[in-house]
Amino acid sequence: MNEELKNILLKVRELYTKYGIKSITMDDVAGELGISKKTLYQYITDKDDLVGKFTDNEIAMRQDEICKCFRENFNAIEELFEISIYMNKVMKDQNPATEHDLKKYYPHHYYRTVKIRRERIFNYILMNLKKGIEEGLYRTELNGEIIAKLYLSRLENIHLNDLFTVEEFTSAKLFSELLVYHVRGIATEKGIIVLENKIKEMETTNNK
Image 1: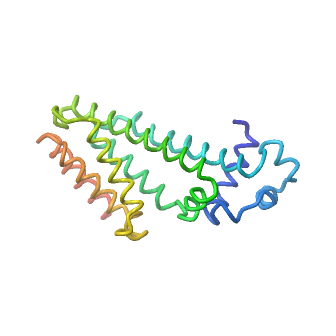
Image 2: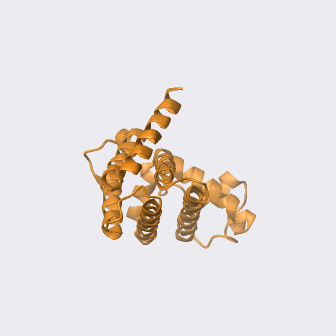
Image 3: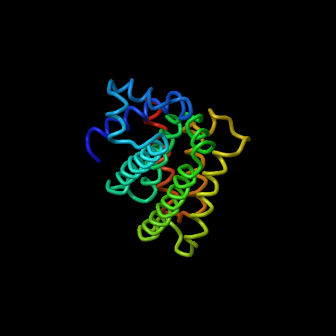
């Protein structure tokens, strides 16, 4: 991706995060960037193309951030905490209107994004389970595919379920409880010790 298109998508991200997608026109984007629409159309075909490139860029950015958790020297449980912290940040920064507009007015881009997100989360959990078993932190008899689907289902239902307020499902506490619930169900005695130590470490950090 060239620098000009990167700059366009960064500005579009700011606008969509603040105002949602529907209300932002190509004129708005060009005006915010200080360029003509003719220049903008050198990189973008139309608004549908802009929304598509925006969603592709969001997918790539999140993939890169989550991959950092796997590149660092974390054990499987620490890895989950890092991913959880990042996902909580994503939820807090996200404007609900953006996802609403994407689903309502650009469903082909929305469902493509959902499909990719599901596949990646499912694969992240499988990778984490394998790592945790190898480290002796998770039980060996686990059915990885079922566990990964259960975790994915919980994540999606929290987001879509009206039992939780916006404040609740974007809170660090909810993500932490979901993670602890997940780990306690799959951990060995060694894993439980690592989990409890991690919880104490985070509580100490948060109380400073």
